[in-house]
Length: 274
Ligand code: ADP
Ligand code: MG
Image 1 (cartoon, helix red, strand yellow):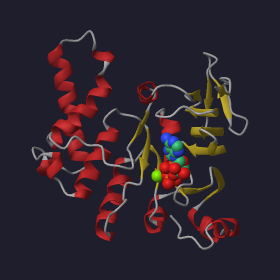
Image 2 (image 1 turned 180 degrees about the vertical axis):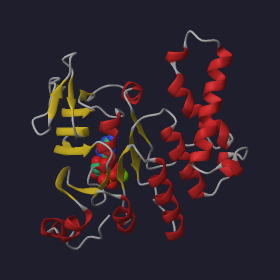
Image 3 (image 1 turned 60 degrees about the vertical axis):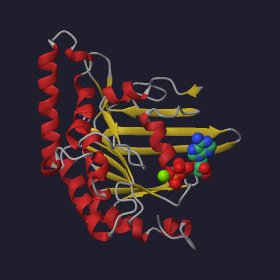
């Protein structure tokens, strides 16, 4: 593995060391530098760099097969990079296991729904909330851990507005309700950087608007990195947009500037914007 060494500060970030000597980014919640991923002979992520500011809602758009989901797998630890660096609040996380990255404050959802269909809505949220209370509660009695987990699950239930569906089997929810549940589950571990992969995929206009409203609400005060194919959703949701084409970010800017960007238009020439 050609992973970059654990520098305290990235070259392109404002950086302030603290008393412990641990570097901290003033602005970057997430910083990806020169990231590469090969699958056999083909390079899918080709020296990709991306900065996500603390507290912003940042969308990644790009054609099908550009490498968007692969990028999320690399950031969240599901895949290990071939080379490059990923820093979360200034700490190197490239190559760590998903649960370690999760523990450092990054949560994610998947492009394909990953709820437990034979469990109730509440039980699904309980399972995701357990991650927040893992070993830290090791010395407390079982009962107090249980009640902390239950309290978190109740809070999540209210946050994603699924209280009336509390005891329904997740498999019996509508598609958009399942996505709402899944977003709730992504929040369960308590991370402050949230990655959502196409939260409105396969939805009608009304369903999309419901999810956009939900995502806006639940990510208040957090940092959001979202892959999104629906341009209306992107423009409603994102403070900044990065365009991923053929394994590289070719532009990052505010929505209006991205819309007007000639390079972006050229990359999409003859292709529907995803
Ligand atoms: P996007 O999410 O932008 O549509 P993906 O990241 O899913 O694109 O895929 C990018 C490319 O990487 C595609 O050509 C896909 O076939 C390839 N790819 C993704 N995962 C693997 C894998 N595990 N092994 C081999 N090729 C893969
Ligand atoms: Mg994808």
